[in-house]
Length: 553
Image: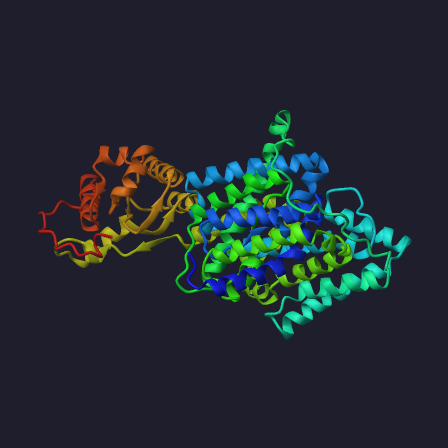
C-alpha cells in the first residue's frame, strides 16, 4: 500500500502530534468534551483514510464543524449531536451513490475565501471564554457569548488564563515563521501544562478526567422520535462535511504531483466515518485542511500516513489519558486562536477583493453571513449572490447590432435599388446568450424599430437561448407584425429550434414562409415581400450569389 513506508510512518506521527491539541480543543469547543474530539480523530480518521477517495487526506474534528455543532448542542444536547452525525453519514453516502462529488468544483473561489474567513473569525471568538478563564455563557450565537464572556472577565479578571492562552498562541505563530516544520502547538501545550502544574496555577482550569480508552460502540443516544427535527441540522452537517472534505482533497492534489482524488469515493469515506464516529461518542468529522497540508509537507505518499496518525492518537487515548487530562483549557484556547489566525490568508483575501467588485462583494457577504448566521446559510447566500452577479455579467455580453445587409444582396443591383431597399429593410445580428437575464432588453429594442417594412434577424451567433428568450422573441415578432412590419429570420440552429418551437415562436414565421437558412435567402425573401406590397418594382429574378460562411450568419 505504501510507496515509502518509513516516510509515511514519520508523516503520520508528525500529523498526530499536530492533531492532538486540535482534537482536544475542538472537542471542548463543540460542547461534548475533549474525549469526543479524541474519539472522532481516532475512529473517523482511520475509516476516512481507508474508504476515502484521497491518499493524502487526514480527517477528524475541525473548527468549521465545531461552528455548526455549537448551536445544535445548545438546542438538542449531546445525544442530538450524535444523532445528527449518524444522519449526516447516511446523507454523505447517498451523495456518493448519486455521484454528486463532481459538482463541488463549481463553488466560486470568493465563496470559499469568504467562508474560510468567517470560520476563522467564529473559531477565534469561540475561544474567548476559555482564553479569559471564565465559564462559557449560555447561548448559541457566538457574538453574544463572546460579549458576555468579556463582561464576566471584567467583573473578575483571570490573568493567568489570559497569559497561558496568549503565550501558547504567540509561540505557535512565531514558531511557524521560524521553523515551519516543527510542531510548536504540542511544544507550547506541554510547556503550558508543566508551568500550570509546577506553579500550582489553580486559576488555569484543566481539561479534566478522560477515559482511558474508547467507549464500547452504542446506539443508546438514538431517539427515533427526534429524527424529524434533526433532519435540517443533519443536512447542514452533511453539506459542510462534503464541502470541506472535497476542498481539502483539492488542496492536497494541488500540493503534489501525480495525486488525484476521487470526489465520490471521498464522500463515501466521509459518510462511513460519520456513521461510525457517533457510536463511540465522537462528533461529526470532515477532512482537515491544516492536518492534510502537514501530512503532504512531511512526505506522505499513501493512506498509511493518515492511518498512522489515527493509531498514534489511539495509543495516546489508552496510555496517556491521565497526563492529557491536566492540559489547561486556556492552553487549548491559545492553540485554536493561533489556528484561526493562520487560517486567514491576507494575500489571498487582498487579491480576491481586488479582482472585481463582484468578487469582493461575494467574499464579504459570505464572511459576514458565516459570522452572523451559520455556515450553510453563508454558502447558500454566497452562491446565490455569485450566481446572480455572474448572470448579470453574462447578460451584459449579449448584443443586438444593426448590420449592413447590402453586401449580402444576391445578383447585381443599381445604387437606386440599394437605397430603396435600405429605406425599407433593417437587419440585426444577435450575438451571445438570449435568456431570462437579458432578453427583455432585446424586446425593447426590437419593439421600437420604426419607419421600415421588413426586419431581418440574423440568429446564428446566439450562443444559448431559454424559454424566456424564446417568448420575448415571439412577443417582439408579434408586436412588429401588428405594426405591419414583416420579420425574417436566418441562421437558426437545430439546438435553438427546439426551444423556439416549444413556445410557438416559429409558428408565425413558418406560416408566412419567413424563416430562412442563410442571410442572402432572407434578403431575397424581404425583397419579394416588398415587391408583393408594391413598394419595389418587380424585376427579373437574379442568379443567387455563392453563399459564404459569413453571409449565413
